[in-house]
Image: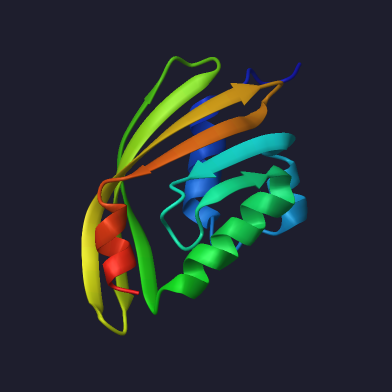
Length: 130
């Protein structure tokens, strides 16, 4: 008997390992047609598609900052096909550092992530530090 789909387990797996997951590992969690939406004003802004796009986005984010970490916060889910989570981002560039909240809305389908909307609290602050 298969386990029921758990959006929290999927999101937790991605959040805890986002910087080191391979495309093959992401393929188990991220749908081929998944779209991750980042604010266009960010250096890694735009839409990123599928497991390979998600992996490329994580490389772009990690490559933008000298230091970058995510402090987990609250997660809310309907237990079926959506969740939202809040966390705190910490980053450092040659010009300075920042700490700010991030909220993401995740949509699921067929047991995988189908869409993510990332909402940085102040993308201008990040851009000013680059």
